[in-house]
Amino acid sequence: MVRYQLIGMDLADVRFAVSPLNELVRSLRAVRDPGRFPLHLRWLHGLDEALGKLDSALLLALTNARLWTPDFLNPRPYSPLTRFDDELARIAATDPVTVQRDLRLVHGGAPLPAPLRGRPAPALARIVDALAEYWQRCFEPHWPRMRALLEGDVTFRGRQIAQHGLAAMFAGLASTVRLVDNVVEVQLHSKLNYTTPTTGGLTLVPTLWATTASTPISPDEPPMILYKARGVATLWEPQPLPSPDALSALLGATRAGLLIHLYTPTSSTELAARLGVTTTAVNQHLRALHVGGLLVSARHGRSVLYRRSDLGDALAAAQPPSPT
Image 1: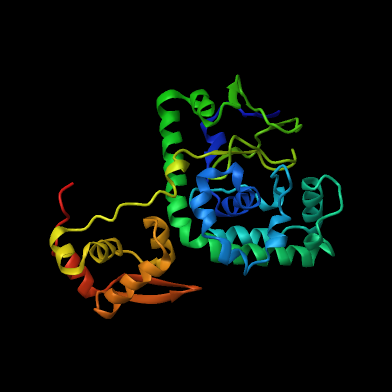
Image 2 (image 1 turned 180 degrees about the vertical axis):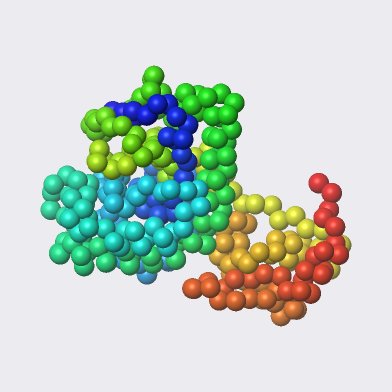
């Protein structure tokens, strides 16, 4: 069991944050053992081609059979608005001694997997490069959808505190978490057992890749509880694509729906994930709208982002949505 002693029971001692890097690293648990994460199978099915282009051996070596991940790859975030690039830069600056210590803790003192062996500094550089590539190919297109769910959870927990107090909020995180007097207790499946004061605050981090609450392995890490976010079961469900009747009659229901949807730049991969269709199918419609002058496109990294053109804006604005 891990125990965090709240200092003075001050609300300012408890904060919520969202970590794109935590989500990225913890998702490797689902890649390693899909059977434990059935709610993410739709996402996992779409990874086969991308994983073949990544350093999959190194990425999977960042977890063990118990699905632990190194503490240095799960840094405490400081805001619900944390940026992936900022977190990755923090990882790249990690002391190599810490890297080796955390990797050996995860792998129980056994020889490290081959992709992680060698001098710590080059090993860390390989890890950072592999994670950056994994983010670009497998995560970034879906991150806006993931982030919206995580931010929604943070809003819900804040409302719980306001209406019912800290104890009720902690009890709602997981059946293994409770507040007793001024101590937050987290019951774990592992043999971790330490008590530490929340000097500098206790950070609560919702995650899409958990079955129950977890904490850092080392008591030297900043106090943090990761817990399963609400609504994960709905994350990969196809979203409806409503469109005005008149615009549907002109363009067809799918293209009209895409035009209404593309008021902000979005990639075809993200659209396909949201709608539950193939990227090829979405691209056919996007190309037609682009050729017709209703969309403009711009390259962003490896992705092409589409949004409405001025003509598309005018056409969309002229058509009120259909009644629901």
